[in-house]
Length: 110
Image (cartoon, rainbow, N blue to C red; front, side):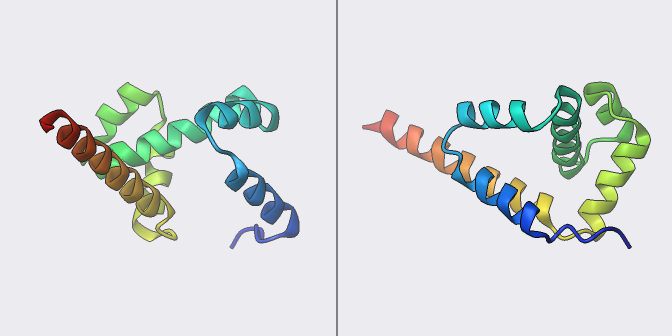
């Protein structure tokens, strides 16, 4: 269908991303690697995926994110027929958030 993204250059980029240790390091790296518009587009797609998983309507998503219905549809297609990358990351983020919340509640109870 599309170009093969599994290349040595992409492997090297992913290795670089996996070396990042903080949100601040991510900002430093991605501001150098991406244009502002590229980074905003990536973050918009991720927000669209999150909102689709929350069962928000296309209209709500478009109003909140500024994404076109074509972008929302493309992200929805990835959620339904893609490689489950969004699902994996959203699930891990949810687990991380619930562990942090549990840890804070346990600390407050002491």
